[in-house]
Image (cartoon, rainbow, N blue to C red):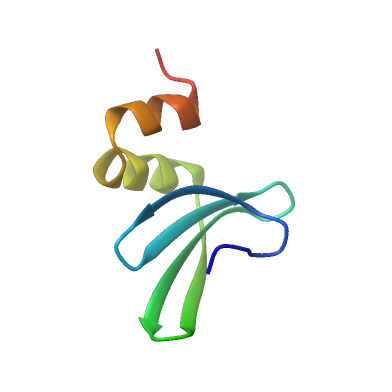
Length: 67
């Protein structure tokens, strides 16, 4: 699931993909079974925490412009 409502992929980890969509904010998708995805709107703070845990330091820094 690489495309979602014109959203940009923030990061991927296993069966989870975090997206950013200007109109919807952060969306966390989880593959529940092949071809079926659960989509949840995620607050910014939770998206940042997910990213810290699941992405490399370089990916996190690039995504959130953290020095």
